[in-house]
Every structure is written in C-alpha cells, then in structure tokens.
Image (tube, rainbow, N blue to C red; front, side, top):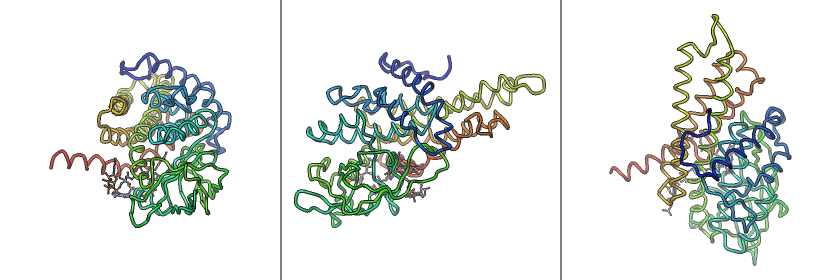
Length: 385
Ligand code: CAA
Ligand code: FAD
C-alpha cells in the first residue's frame, strides 16, 4: 500500500472523498499538467471539473449548494490535487480555505445566501490582501476605501493575487480609516463587473498554471451591503483566515512531496546500473527512507493542525509549524527525487522537475517561512517568559 495517509483517523466520508479526488486528479488533471505548465494557463475544463466534483464549496452547507464536508476533507482534497498538480491544488485551496471560509465565518445571512451558492456552483474567488509595498507587513496596506452615500469607493492596487485572472468574485482588504491604522482595515466583496482591472499577469518559476496578477481599483464602487464583518474588522478577518489557510498550504506542500516521491521511487527499481536496480543500493535506500520520514512528519503536523482546528482547540502555532515544515520537506524531497531519476529527472519528460519548481512557493505565500517562525516564536515567548 503506497501513499494515502498512514493515519487511520479519517472518517469513511473523508476516505471516500480522498478516493474520488484522487481519481479526478489522475484521470482529468493528469493529462493536462504539462501543457498547462508550459502555456502558463489553467485549462477552463479543469476549473469546470472541480465544480462538477463538488470541490468548490467543500465545507459550504448543502443549503448553499456546497458539499458540507469537514475542514479535514478540504485539506485532503488539497493534498490529493497537489500530488498531481500543485497549481490546481492552490486554485481550489484559495477558493475554499480563504474565500468561502471568510463568507461562511464572517458573512451575515444575506451575504451567505447570495455569495456562497455562486462560489459553490460556478464563480471563482480570490483573496486580495498583498500589495506592492506590503507583503509580510500586510497590515500596512495602502488601498483606500471612502464612503460615499450608500457606496464605498476603493482606490489602490493589489499584487500577487492567485486566481485573479479567472476570478469573478474578489475579497478585497482596504483601509477605511487611516487614522486608526490597521484597525481601519475593512473587507469588501467585489465582482469583476464592478470594474476590477487586471493590470499584469506574472510569469513564474513554478505553479505556472495558477494565475497570479496585479489588479487595480480605480474608483471601484462597492455597495455598502458588501462590507464583510463590519468596518475595521478586516485585519482580524485576514489573519484568522490565514491561520487556517496555512494548513491548506501545508497540505499542498505535503501532496507535492508525495507526488514527487511516487514518481521517482518506482523508477529506481526499474533502472539498473552495475547490474542491479539502483533502488537496491543502500546509498539510495537510506535517502528514500529519510524522505519517507520527512513526508510522514509533514503529514502528521498537517493533519494534527487540521483536527485541532476542527475540534475548536488552539491551532495557530501548529498551523505555522505545519506550513513551515511541509514547505521544507517539499523542496527537499522533490529535489532528491530529481537526483534519484538522474538525467531523466532533470528533463521535462517525467514531470519531477516541475514538482521542484512548484515547491519553492511554499516558503513564500500565505506568510513566508520567516513569518511562520516569527508566529511560532511569539507563542514560545508567551509560554516561557
Ligand atoms: N492570529 C491572530 N491574530 C494575529 C496573528 C495571528 N497569527 N498575528 C497577529 N495578530 C493580530 C494581533 O493580535 C494584533 O491584533 P490586536 O491589535 O487586535 O491585538 C494585530 O494582529 C497586529 O499584531 P502584530 O503587531 O503582532 O502583527 P504585525 O503587524 O507585526 O504582523 C501579520 C501581523 C501581518 C499578520 C504578519 O504576522 C503576517 O502574518 N504576515 C504575512 C501575511 C500573509 O500571510 N499574507 C498572505 C496573503 S494571502 C496569500 O498569500 C494566498 C496565497 O498565496 C495562496
Ligand atoms: P517580503 O515581505 O518583502 O519579504 C521578503 C523577505 O524578507 C522574505 O524572506 C521574508 O521572510 C523576509 N522578511 C520580511 N519581514 C521580515 C521580518 N519581520 N522578519 C524576518 N524576515 C522578514 N497575496 C494575497 O493577498 N493573495 C494571494 O492570492 C496571493 N497569492 C500569491 C501567489 C504567489 C505565486 C505569490 C508569489 C505570492 C502571493 N501572494 C498573495 C503574496 C504573498 O503572500 C507574499 O508574497 C508574501 O506574504 C511575502 O511578501 P513579499 O513578497 O512582499 O515579501
């Protein structure tokens, strides 16, 4: 028995979901991975497939058109998609763990009734926090919101926004009261047709099929009923959602490491040198054993953080640990996987090199590795000083 999870704490529903996502990923996404990477473009049929599979409202209630599954199910889906394509995985991850969750958690009844069905059925969402001058220092954002009658007018620019090229729904964090500093940050729901402008689509090292754009707001007019969670509540919404979202990125990196491992290890038992399969040399076997331990530790941290969140236990420190460590493991294991396959691993043919390119982003988005360490260190200081 290879991969899934060695934990046996998944419910039957979660195991069935894992199987169905795996089938979708292998059968539908698999054949398109290389082409999407080379074209730097997500195939629309993949996004449509994610909706058809019920993966775009995983935790959303059935009343709102969702699959009403557990948070752990969302994490399982992200892991399984990443084993095949980390780009498709992050598209689904941002849409669920960031966009849907903000509306489920902070939206009022009218907002939930209006936006959750759209997000579960067809409209892709994006989460717009980072700006050219505010990445790690996210609360220093400069996009401004000004009230005019029954509308808010937004001006500014967001950078690095995942899904934004294809998205129709945008959660935008803007400052509505400069004098209050970050306590003026407010979260707005906007739609593309209100005038969200795509300014630049990035060309990237990895996750190239996942769109990443700069978007501009030039007097973007948003009705007052589209404020989420109340004026000034945006900074708390952003970071509380990111605490959860980081478990999603941990799962993406875990799936990536497993995907690279699963591609390279069988090759080592087929390829012969010095008259024997290279995978039977102790030097190779010990490296593979070490990588298996790495993956297992990432898995345990990731699902532990997910379960803690689900059970209402504190999880912020554990989520930061999971995201930090899974990113280290993803980079290390995918790099080794290239070496295990030798020259073949270095070509585009096997897809192993793509996992390595894709792994680099784990240490950057949803809080860099230093930000995760800083988050963990703040807890340690509280616990020990
Ligand atoms: N959980 C809950 N609250 C937190 C928190 C956390 N992890 N970190 C900080 N806060 C709260 C503090 O309690 C404080 O709130 P109050 O004033 O109400 O007490 C407030 O935030 C400010 O705290 P600090 O002064 O300690 O925080 P800071 O200004 O130094 O930095 C931060 C805060 C911006 C959240 C920073 O720690 C951080 O996480 N930066 C990374 C930003 C990030 O993750 N961006 C991701 C963008 S989305 C994305 O990337 C998606 C994708 O790629 C797929
Ligand atoms: P900086 O903040 O400039 O960091 C540069 C370096 O300085 C890093 O190594 C960092 O660790 C270090 N550093 C900064 N501050 C400290 C400190 N206090 N202590 C120690 N070291 C520090 N954002 C969104 O809002 N929505 C998205 O959908 C989204 N998707 C993304 C997709 C991609 C492909 C990329 C590349 C980014 C995405 N981002 C998104 C933005 C992402 O969250 C930021 O890039 C990230 O938070 C880092 O910000 P920065 O790039 O400005 O780097």
